Length: 245
Image 1 (tube, rainbow, N blue to C red):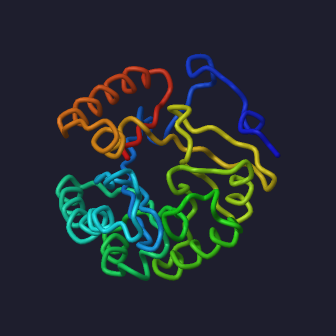
Image 2: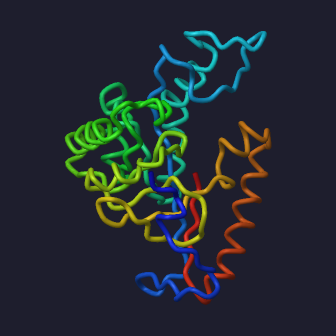
């Protein structure tokens, strides 16, 4: 068993060698859209509506239909807004979406969105008996649908076991986005060669702010602007990455 801290070296962002981006860019603002398959026969990945008496039902129709609204309506609103802003995001996608919601996956593919593997369906990775098999299945489905092999991985709920990263590298992926421990990419050791950890965000995230913390959308806007201002100031000496999830 390899512990996370055994996989990377500690360094301060203010004393490590400066990060230089192509074209001398100071920052990357990385938009990530999570598109998932919630299995109606399992507990839902998130609960907006709390079940009566604390007993989670299966099927959980109130929360499944909330999810389904996102696939039927919310996705298309986001796509129109991003197209208007001329932003092409990375789509973190459960591979089964390509089979269950081919119109959604095709629209993202045709718009030039990057596909990031996000497992097959949305369930805790700790409950998957053969992680490597599921990763390979997910990669194959996405590659068959888009014509491109995904290079990056985001675990469901950003979850991992102690050996998940070894499986990610063994499947030929080169980076992952589960960790929120830095504002710059870091190299991580695995049993199958190094992986690059790309900074994700737990704070600039609609699930965190709106579902967990019950804030309104203007709080997300302000927090996003504040985070950008801080990182842009720090990026004068060394580039930063800001994820919006």
